[in-house]
Image (cartoon, rainbow, N blue to C red; front, top):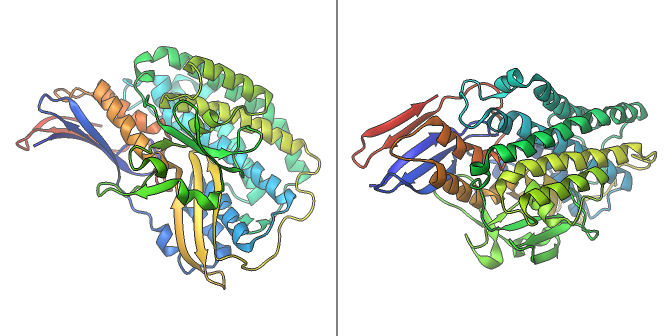
Length: 474
């Protein structure tokens, strides 16, 4: 009988999951699995709802990145109506998505992963949380709160609320941004840039502080997928799908979102509710690919903005070139994306024509099936709908970023466990490293987050005869 270590629940991620580590007869890690233990039924209970309700409904999939689902759903609605979204509406949608990237990445770095990176993987788990971080470095913690607040406030100014704004609709958006709000947010940009710059400098020191973790936190060849544009610059809304391999060779390019099934297959396993998407031409497992910040910076040539391009050049130099195969650098990529997002927000807010003109297009159902795409903070998000002639939903398929990273997360968990876990004698720090490997992908499993407080965690090592050989509790 295989010995097994269970980490349940995995903490400081958005949702609920556990990790099982399987040991050989010598007590060494042989395999590992990342289990998503909750079930979400959006693909089923959206059936029968009117198309026009879908952006507001699917935004409820996640309380951390509702904007991502809002925009992907609205894009699907645009295609079913067969309309061109007014330019003013597209610019406002882009602005909200950029704000979403800023606030979500700030949460991930400062609140969810920051306690590990800044306090230490072996630090006291009672202090290794956002409160401990605030006690150790009040200025940095305060900066993280302020940076996230900037993104959330901009979302609220556009959509009327920070969480679940029912703002983007098939054909456009409901409202614009006032001139006074634009000026107020422009005035806050310098502070946001200062905080992001401080975070990048902190992370550069972290790379030097944890060489063993940097070398083992998800370092392996894989494919990468993201939205791309004809200019080769970083894309977060619009464009087509591009897939590259570990050497940077383009395997698929200019793939319209509604043709995603030609390159993406979906598998399932009995031990997880999370699907396992893969690059179809290479088959299940062989077609493992990653999405998200690391994929986006690997796929783009540049950001097309001054500060972000300078930061990207340093990042690539520190990683030894591009593509970057190290998931630990996902944290770095988030910080660089914050810089690029802030620069693009500033450009949009400074445009006197932002939001000028018509904000929505009117039409009825002109197509019965469509796919919408957007780059969520965690990676490419696809919404696939079929409707009847009256616009009632008949079919929904959601390709979520965390699902697309599922194979890579499992590979990362195994790699870290084999490097750091000694099954003959457990300690909390080695198991926290396994959790931290999951957090490097910033997985979003549901509408909850464990950034605050302390969740119960019991880790047991069980021998072949069922006897508990060792345990760690917190």
